[in-house]
Figure 1: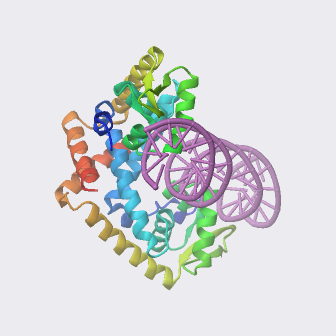
Figure 2: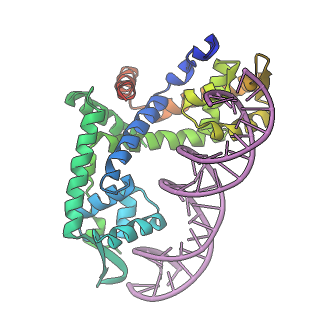
Figure 3: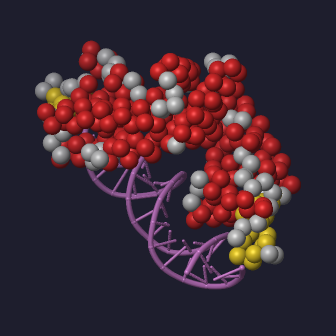
Length: 150
Length: 150
DNA sequence: TATTGTTATACTCTATAACTATA
DNA sequence: TATAGTTATAGAGTATAACAATA
């Protein structure tokens, strides 16, 4: 049993005036659902991004990858350790610069990346079902303006 | 000296097809700038949200506040400890339910909340300068549809 | 029995300094 | 001297189980 005060919704009108408040909530919902979705193929979001970018840019070096995804170099190491351990990606020494590793996907890596993209597309269709394609393009354009302005 | 391959931008076209990718990047930019902004008055984002909601809903209980902001109850404790320690909020026993605390802002708390809202508004004007008011309303409406659909 | 606030704890994510081997 | 990858570590942020006091 609850009393009247408990049933009253808490007023967050002051926070709702801000774009960032809504953006954080929406981003959290997308993030939580995508994380749940990718668990099916035992990938985390960051691991999926890393794998997909390697598939799309074979021969990439770790430092380039870290820059592209705004990951700190040290945090990339264990992600790649895991992908290599699972035979999804391989690290091979670059002959012309023996400090660096070239990252290439294995066939299994390419296959899993394709599956991950499929699941991600399904997830977005599910979460964004109330937003049509034109509106999604608008949303992306506005968010890109925020990113580009920074 | 870098070679041609190093200078080539990493292709993230596959990830850019997803709304969530752009949303995460935009949300991160807003979040990073707001965190930097609030440091000026020694508040974290979550602490600011808690303070503002208490100012807007005096007498609120911790469990209601936790529900409203989607914080786990245990994680709220240290936030309130800090706000109480800084004399911005006070916890007083509810006479009709001696398990609960009513949360009320102090005068200093109300004043700091007003300052925080001012700084947050300035921050949004800065980060969203390339997006006019109509577009901001569109953005909020679309994100609310995502949140409501979940 | 159930709920409020609390404690302890653990897990993920992210950030920094310093090391090694190469350049 | 600088860079690529690595190690160790520390700080947020977040989640769960279990407890005391009270309902």
